[in-house]
Length: 235
Picture 1 (tube, rainbow, N blue to C red):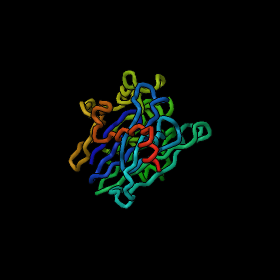
Picture 2: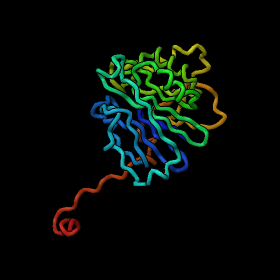
Picture 3: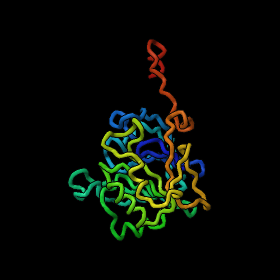
Picture 4: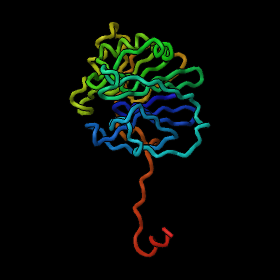
């Protein structure tokens, strides 16, 4: 089982030959990131904002949902402190397979309630916004991961060099709230492998861009042929 960070809040999650893309972004509204042209078996969207709902960027394989090795469920939570009256609501996606629980928190904007904490408790991996601005402030996001006692925390949705909105904070503003420096693991890859022997950590993945996504790249659409042959092919 692997989790690959594709930038912003977008991830490719793979298990048993099945690929799920979560929160594909529209690069026209997500500064510094390239246009997504991906292929996968399923796409999940936390909410209908342009940085999270670019379904057009994902070509689906057509495999039936019964092939999916994950049990996928979702919780609904406010996007902001005004309880959804400003930015609306976001989905927290829970993916469970073979004893592992992965949680993608979407653009969570308020603290979790008791029922949500109970459902998310003990997550093996929690992907959570670390850039404040449009979601929980960094310190509150850290508190949310404490409440569910996530084993591995993968920060997302932050200002990364020239990528992401300028109003977003860097990942450093999030990880400074973790007391033990040895708890912070900085990777030279964009892929995290989920296994039984993983140690508790904040896993800061490195954005590598499309060159690292060759197996996810959707085939280029062929230009429509013109002339008599093109006409006959459309018949």
